[in-house]
Length: 355
Image 1 (tube, rainbow, N blue to C red):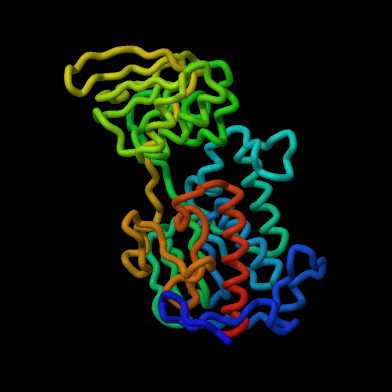
Image 2 (cartoon, rainbow, N blue to C red):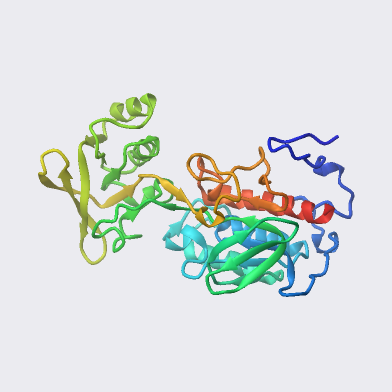
């Protein structure tokens, strides 16, 4: 028996109860699901009606696309005009994505995901989405290059972007000392001085993680007290490797032709400037979900992340699904985004099969 979810929409029954003709293959099922799903032909009019459009092309977007394409749904992916592949295209070596024991460069991982999606018939469009109309049974996606796509289902995987300091050297030393992910890059700064910028739980969590690797970790915060939870502050204070530079902001990130060497700090109360040695600068001042283009058509939480129904990827709008860092403000890892992209594809596949 179906249950009513938090949006008042009747949830479909357990996937294990679906008929063999519509049930997606599990990870242990070697049968290609292409033969299992009946695909409704696209309608034609002002524009063809696609089965599904995926907005975004990071790990969540490409994973969803791979599953949708293998199901024979011929998804269209609006991947982005300038940075298709999401944040990983700006990452150097990725060592924590399963299946690559020697690591893999972020851009290479995204290129392989794209090729895998295309192998199964996905159509990749390198453009940006500037608006959507999610009303009705057929949704419309408007791109900045004046293309528009109509589809029976939409999967939103636009991710989030790191908040930047907007100081000299931040862009220049990206991937050469400046990082936004301690889990991804901390290992590369073993035995070296590290600076973490920020005052929330994320900043202190990164500082604690980086203390395992760096010779020292200096936490720079613009106020005289932290926004972080008491327990996180206590843990950081108790770590002998972690020092604190309060009431200070980063004025510039300095270095040579190949790497970061120091940061210039300014005390916001006295105006005094100091230079702090650092080979790694980790910026942890928050994320901004890329959801502005939705223009209020999907419910968001107070931080702008898309709300979904429980552990599913269903939004409050039938036929619209969301996955990855535009939903998840907790884990924000490539592998967790990929897993959520898989779930979004299976949710969308079931919706299309039952529509």
